[in-house]
Image (tube, rainbow, N blue to C red; front, side):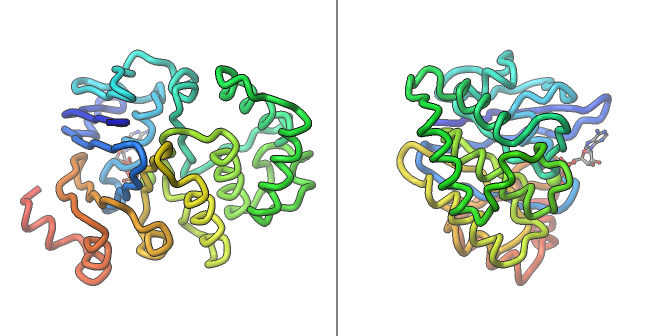
Length: 249
Ligand code: ADP
Ligand code: MG
């Protein structure tokens, strides 16, 4: 099991947001996480990466069988965890090129495969695939990027870092259909028996491209329903209320 979340409770300041999350993801699987606004999806993503604003009050997170609750965010990334943020931050003063080189160097350190010339070629070719102009390499990270450009930047990072688990927090929100297809192609490119993904989304559309193995619905800080891809269509037509009634949350 790549990711195992057991009865996870977490709070921000004094407010309990995650109230007993259970989730298991096998290596090679694509899971979708859906649910109404404010149900705790981004909180779960942040807690998984070890964001310091959240306090885990009970439960466990195992990654590759190892308890990571005491592990720093950087070390979680080094273990192969990646989060594409819902709202990527602007980093003035740090160019895209420098940022990508530095982080890829660190994240691939153990694999001993880092070669600057090959890296630059790889970035250029990925930028072409992502439909990003190569001049982005010299711009400051995310500064003045449009919403869609920020999202493509997140996927470019994912493709370079080659994580074992990529968590995509609403990477598809606000994207036009072409950008959406590019983001989905990025995930599909990594798809295989050494890659897993947890895709947080509101929309059926990206899931049509990604065909998730499992779909989970989060409400009020818990996963209240899990199923196959057929759940997505049901949500699209019936909304979330019927689930609320059935599971009585
Ligand atoms: P989702 O991603 O499913 O829309 P979030 O995880 O962003 O939900 O939010 C879950 C709940 O946590 C919401 O009620 C939200 O208002 C609350 N919350 C998130 N961040 C903070 C914060 N920094 N301080 C207080 N409450 C927060
Ligand atoms: Mg969110």
